[in-house]
Image 1 (tube, rainbow, N blue to C red):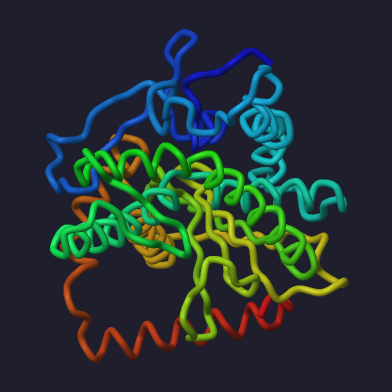
Image 2: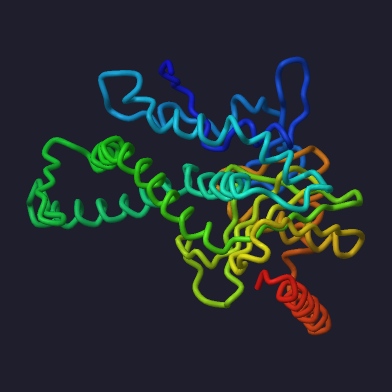
Length: 331
């Protein structure tokens, strides 16, 4: 595999299902996370979105060494994504093989961990550690500080230079760790995960983002991304939403539970999923022009405080959903 400089952390094979094809190119609509104005929506080729130079490139003398992670994602998941998508969006596909199930689960889990948001959050956290240590050392007249038994010298360096060096030095180990965590979580999720696909049958649309896999925990405890009991949610296109449910068993793990949503149920599914996509995103949300504009129109409504009557109604719906999922062995 030749050196690939521009590396996508959200696969183009995924993004194309929210895109419009013109000639050989696919175009998607994007909206910066910090904007709520429709005029800020812009069109961009999927080849130019969710991409970063040398994100997965490792140190090494050969192409094989440098492209190890990029090739792993490409060969094991991206080249098979169309098969995953076709299985999940085929309404007549009710059962799957062990191999298909493993491919679906592993694709979603690696998509959860391969985005830049994890690295950005870690770097932001460590920037603050470096800033505090740097300022403390300066105040005491030192040009170094100790961190985990390591002497870190910043002689003739600014804080910004020190932070930049750390990011550069740690990037390779960060992307390796991301992959290792994903592979471990795949093993846990293969034990009990079942698959559910929700399809919207009216005009409502799901959107996605630059960090599209959302994790939730219905047990009411503190949510950890590494918890195998989380529900994983991934919009597949503007009409389909995938859920990996963590409470299955041998009787239903090779089944796909399918649910169609219309009218109020469709609206609720869309609003919840799109709200989660916005919150989960790092820099922008993505989708069709209609999907993004509808999200902005819904935003004020979804962010207002609900009335006591609405809370009672939503609690009843949640209880009914829990009951149905328990009947299906998914909770």
